[in-house]
Image (tube, rainbow, N blue to C red; front, side):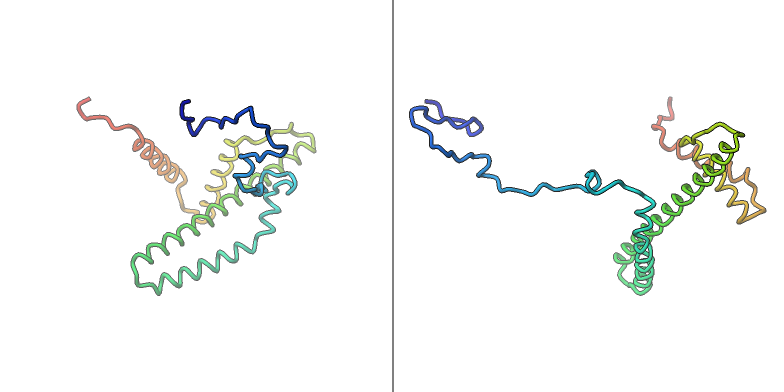
Length: 184
C-alpha cells in the first residue's frame, strides 16, 4: 500500500462501524474566532455623512493645533539632529493636512454658493437646471484662486502668474518623458 500524502484526505476503513458522534477535524482543530465587523460597510451603523462627521469631531482640530505647538516647542529645544528631522517631518505633515483640509473647505463652499445661485435662477424660471462636472468645479477653484490672489495683492499681473504655472507644469511633464539619447 503506498504511503498517503499529507495533503490527501485521510482514508478510513469501511469495515469498522463509525461512532454516532464523530469529531470533525476542521472544527475541532481551529479555535472559534469572532467575526470582525467593519463599521464603514455595515448598514447597522447608519450612513456616512461627512458634514456631520466634521461637526462631531471638531475637537480633533484643536488637539492637532496643540500638538503642533508642542512639536514646535520641542523642535526649538531639541539638540539631536535625527530627532530634529523627525520633528520637522511631523510638522510638515500636520501643515500639509491643514492645507488640504482648507482646500476642501474652500471647494465645498464654492460648490455650495454655485448651487445656491443656480437653484435661485432655476426657481425664477430664468434657467434650466445644470449640474457641475468635476472639470467645472476645478474651473471654479482656479477662478476663486485668482480672485483671492487679486485681493491679497492688487498689483499682481495675473497673466504672468498663469504663464509661470504653465511653464512649471510643462517642465514637470518634460521631466516625466522617457529619456532619449542625444544621437537620435
